[in-house]
Image 1 (spheres, helix red, strand yellow):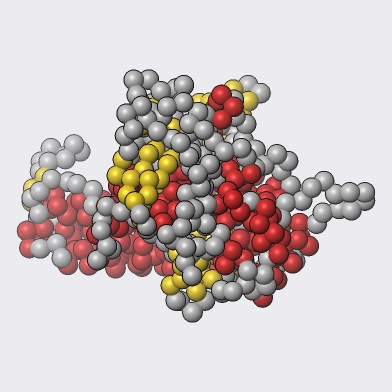
Image 2 (cartoon, rainbow, N blue to C red; image 1 turned 180 degrees about the horizontal axis):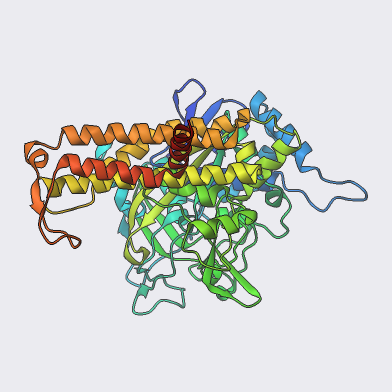
Length: 562
């Protein structure tokens, strides 16, 4: 029987995590039910992909700490490969995870949502000088406010305990920066206000996770050795309960993966109204040290090199969120690049001399190791990416973006293949941009003003994503590299030409007739038409697809010699 009207609402026992079962059925489960083998859970599916990622990381922190390994005694050596094989087998068999269940028993009192002394991820006596609170939608990002309108038959100004728990986890991970309510007991408060300290840690990152056959395998795949063997790594429930003040007077050191996965960037207190939550107080919590420079403890994000912050004898890296626009195409470089790719990346960008390659997520390095050593049979890995984009000064949430891609052993391990994939993504983006320019030129041909057309660009890239993922997966079959790269460029050219032809046909009679236009290179106006701009588009495609130009030149030479 549910105890949702009880005093505490235990997250270990009450169903609050929204998920999908192995047959596609929606589920609402407790933390214990994820690990006790009673449900075959495929994946999380809550109120947003970003929320799911935040909840996944709480589950991972539990999993990591339950399986953490102390320094081996005597001659005993810890084998990450052996640990993974067993953890994965248990996950696929649906066996109860005794270590996790035992661990949860030891911290049960810290998972109560309304505990009078240490409510989960909250401060029990958090309050402002005036006793003010905010509506509960304060912890739901602006970009997802439509969530409320979809809850037919339920009041819009309250959340159930389970919903509130999910958004509580989210707000610690992703809350935007900006002025917060000034909590009594926080020495940083001035004039009743808490001034900006930055976003939640996860909001600074490019959230990356390997997708398993079920949720339990997902947990095992996203566990690296550093997650199990980092001394002094403690999630929030293993520490002394927070107060309104910043931990340790602000002199905080990142403990490790579990610490970052549950980092308390805010101080929060949920206000219940009978059997629902109707208000909340959110104030400043723990600032990320040094704005995240060289905070390498998170295995699920890429890190970018910062030329401006690097100095002699100090190389600066920051967590790198994925680009919100055309995420899959622009994410490949931080997702798969290695240190050995730095010269290639410098040659294809404006990064400049001395720039270093991004550091890809540690979980992908480990996956490559499993494939290389036959811990896992070489196959295709499904990778999920989650990024939250913020507005000006990170003071609002602009959008939540999610994408998926597939990777395989050759792409992660082979330098030449990896660079071929990076190049393929780059040239595909360039051809899509040419399509957007063609759309803008059609406006000119019809008598209007040039304006780059982003819509056909995004539509074309979205349609090409499945084909690109299949092409990437095809490297597992060891094709001849250059021929395979040419094959992709041919596919892109054919697709983009068909999209361009469709835009040409829809341009209308005014664009077909054209207009006189004075250019900087001619003294007299030239007639520009939809057809002339289509020819220009074709030439742009040729410039963007250099391998096809090489092949064309070779054929011309052969024909000439004949």
